[in-house]
Image (cartoon, rainbow, N blue to C red; front, side, top):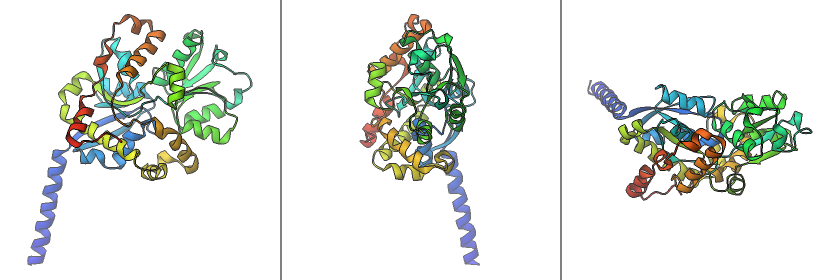
Length: 342
């Protein structure tokens, strides 16, 4: 009888503790601009490592086609936070919509402009894209902004090229291999997957490394970050700090483990069937991940400069780019834990 009572009491205690834990956790929905893309790996890996739970958060990741769709989810109220490219914060500032990034996980954008294997012979430079069909993750996404910037920089009218949304994963690879589009702005692992089948794959522009990023933008250019509306950030400081803690811990874990160990933690459906290609892409991508979580003020200014070139609306808006990000939550992590990401 005592044994049975002990079991019942133990079960009740466990229930109370688990209920208390659930009550203590804040529920957060993060809209991801393409979960299969390695550029967003820290957001997904943080969940796989249990870092959100450790930070006291019950996080749901919602995987969407591109960064613009993730942004719409937050602006529409169906998600709390975007895991996407920082440049949206700058672009929306021109429309008087205040967005604020609070932890940066990509110090380079990792965007690659690739020619379809079916059209290699006819496209040798960015100027050859005039009048062509070019794939992006989704119209209005960072891949689209990047394309328009490159077209303008090379003396082309961005409206003279057809932009087609093809996603970031298998759909983008299929569209390229079938020749449905002439070229595409892609990210890893899709670029490496294509190179695995087409060794002579033609790349017109590449921002996966510091050298390439400096060549394209003239300075470092931040990519993926967690951001939300300034109102949400200011009204949910506890949750924002917890998210920052989780991402910082994940960045630290990434830079202290091998690519093989990182891959082993990722969901099977993201890694895919060809683990060798995913691993090769991951090894190419790891240097892209931030070691500090901080926004480099010069990088933010570079984003503003790029958008000012391609968008008269941004150029005229008189944007104070310092309002589009904050480093205070990253600095708080360092104060309380002594942690830098690396």
